[in-house]
Image (spheres, rainbow, N blue to C red):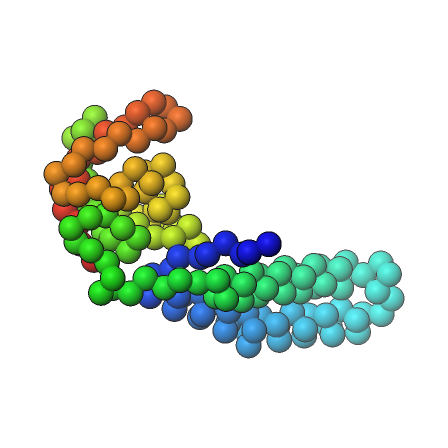
Length: 158
C-alpha cells in the first residue's frame, strides 16, 4: 500500500527534522540511562521504574519511526511555489468572519504541521478545504458542527 503524501512548508520540514534529531541524539540517551538506573535497582519483574522507562523508550522509538516515515513521504512547498492569487498550501489568508465581524489570519499548512493555536490550519480541515483554490474577494461557506460559517477573503500572502 502506498504511503500518504505529507505536505510540509519549509518551516514545517525544519521543525520535523529538528524534533527527529533531538529524539535520536538526546531523548534516546536519556531513556537509555533511565533503563540502566532502573535495572540497577534489582529485580525487574516488579520494578515500576523499569516498566516506565521501557514504555517511554517505546514511545520515543514510535515517534522516531513516524517522523522518519513523514520525511520519506514529504512534499515540501517552496515559498516560490506559493501563489498570492489563489489560496493554496503555504498561503497566509486574511479572512473576515461575516457573522462576528472579525478578521482572522490563517496559515494553510499540511495536516502534519497544523496547529490551530498558532493560526496554522490544515488544508484538510473544513476551513482549510473551503479556502483552497479561492481568490481575494471570494466569500466561502464552511460547514462546521454548529452550522455554516461565512468568510470573506481579504488578502492572500506567502
